[in-house]
Each structure stands twice: as structure tokens, then as C-alpha cells.
Length: 466
Image 1 (spheres, one colour):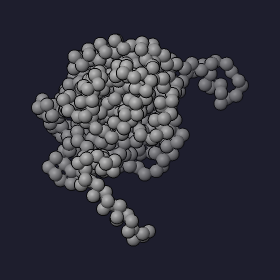
Image 2 (spheres, helix red, strand yellow):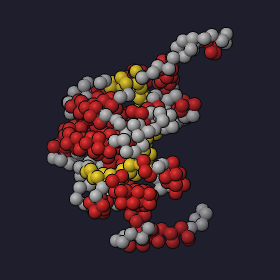
Image 3 (cartoon, one colour):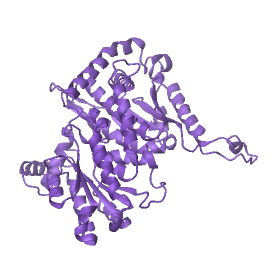
Image 4 (spheres, helix red, strand yellow):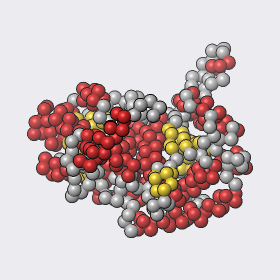
């Protein structure tokens, strides 16, 4: 398993001092990076942060594999009900291991598809239900709190849909992932005898892909979760090392933080040159945005910090976004994700047509072309003074993907320590949730109902330009 990080195009010697980092700046940043490592380690040892331990939780993996083995062959569709971190990790795993929709091979009981219900658009939910057979569907509902409005509302619809066709047998077609010993979803699962799996209290949703949140759906659709955890464990060992030369996650965190803060690169473009990593780019977008977008430091100092993550797909977005990236505001750092080996190189036929635009490609392959496109885009950005760096995965398989997901989580956590913020809370998300509870009539949210009414009154009085 090999994942390399090439930061050459972040350096002043390559891209110029206006947009690149000097050796002196990098050397000066070293102690801060090592302090971030020590701080994260201290929090982990104290039990505050749990994601580094997930690759070693063999008992939960065993229970998931046991359950998956018991129900295998009874369904052709896994319907995942969740949102945010409860869904994006599973999409990243499915997309990475089996390819993006809709080009996966035909689904069957031997090769179940994954349908993710991660929005409450009624047209989307209706279309999804119409596409599935309730007699061949296994529903997995994921909500750490057990009360996420979007998830619970969708689950109530799916539960009713299953019950209408299966009656009492519907309970056997529902599995739950939630917190142990608390929350209404956990209580309902106990009352109705749903298969239930728990995630640790010290693991937040966006860091939970290697917990039951991501492992249960992955196992049910046939992904080898042992190999995922093996790759993640190997990366975890590396991520605790003190050397910046060997600790890829820490070095990437230090350089991303430094280029952001010292050169005002307030946007990071995650640029995978692999459709199989496209789901991972969206998973990363939430991880980076929710973890690093914070109003205050741990000491309560108001900072309103954050680097905006953008997902772009190579080569597709060379033809939709790169014009902006080359000639627009120089406020971005680009992180390419490349792959050395594809399962099928995509051989281009050797036939000659007599046309130069065709014949120079004859006999080559798509793997060579997509890699040339990535390297060419990096070179062009560099010539235009746009800093960029590259993660190279040897291949996209379970071990590499598990390692890469863990690398991204460590990198994010390290940057949070460098910023002196709590990368593991999400207060900015909570207010909207509370307003939603109030609008939908949930008890105990009268204060937020009144605050929303005040907001509406201000809107009613407002006129254009006043």
C-alpha cells in the first residue's frame, strides 16, 4: 500500500515567492506541526477524539460481518437513510470500490446496489421508492443523535413502505446505526427488534466512515471491510510518527495550512483524476468545511476561520472550471489526487484513420491519457503561479481507500490543531437544526420558534434598498 504526497509545486523555487513557500517558512512551521501532533495525541489518549482508534475495533467489524453473512442473498438493494457524515462516507466507499452510478454492473442478490436517501426532496424520495422492490430491500438508517429531522422523516416513510408489503416481517429488513443507550431511534430499534450497531460517542459523523456508519453498508454490498481497516491502521501508525518526512498526513497539513495562511489561499480545490474517487471528494468537502469553518478559537477569540473546499473532477472539469482556475482570482490551492494503476488501462485501438487528430492516440490507452492530463494541468497551473500539490495512490482498492480516508481525517485534525480550534464540533450547523425543529412543531423548541418569528417580522418590514 503506497500513498505519496508531492508538494513540489507549493515551493517558491518552482512557483515563485509570491505564491510559493520558501525553505525558511517551512522550517519555521515545523515546530507548530509537531505541537499539533502532540496536542492531537494528548486529546486521543484522553479519549476526547476517537477516530484514530476505529481501524482497531475488531469486535464491531466481526459483528457486522456476522450480520452481513446472515442476511446475504435476501436482498438486491441496500437503502441507506442518512445525511451528511451518515451518508457521504458510504457513497465514497461504494463509488471507490464498485464505481460511480450509473455505470456499476447490474445489481442482484449477489451484487446488491446501494441507494442513498440523503435529502428530503419529495420527488427524489418517491422516485427512489419506485425504483426499489420492498421484498428485496434492506434498509439501514443512520443517525448518531437518533433525532436528525431529515433522516427520521425519511425513515418513517421507508418503514411504512416496508410494513405495507411485509407486515411484521419488515422489522427483519431494517438495521440501525446510532448511539448506544440514548436517543429515540435507539429506543425504537429496541422496541421493534431491529438489528442495531453503535458508534463511539467520541466519533463525530464526518469522522465516522470507518465505524459502523460506513462499515455496515459497505459489508452489506460486498466490500471487504477488513482490508479497509487494514489500510487505515497502517496509515494511523504513520500519522503518529514525529518525522515530517515520513508522516504524510502531518506534512500535508503543515503545508496546506501554511500556503493558506501565508499566501491567502482561502479555497482548496480537491481534484481527483479518477471517477472512483469522486465520491471521496464530496466526503472530503464536508470533512474540511465542517471541521475547519469556525467562529472562535478554543480560547474564545473570534476568528471566523475556514478554507472553502471545492470538488473538481479530472478531466471533466478541465472543460468547465479550469479557465477560472488559470485566469481568475489567485485565491486557491489545488490538491490533485492521482492513481498509478487502473484495473483496466482502456486500450485505444491501433487502427489508423489517416487523420492526425486521431492517429497520434492509436495504440495508446486511457490510463496514460488521464495521467498526462493531470500532469499537464498541474504544469499549466504552476506556470500561471497557482500553487498545487498531489496525492498519488498506487491503486484504488480497499487498503488504499481505507488509508486515504484515514489520511484525510488526520490531516484535517492536524490543521484544526494548528488553527487552535475545535475541529470536532459543529455549532454552526446546530442553529439551523433547532429552527427546523421549531418550524415542524417539535416540543421544547419554543425559544427558537419565537426567534424565527422575529426573523420573519424583520423580513416583512424590509424593502428593497432599506
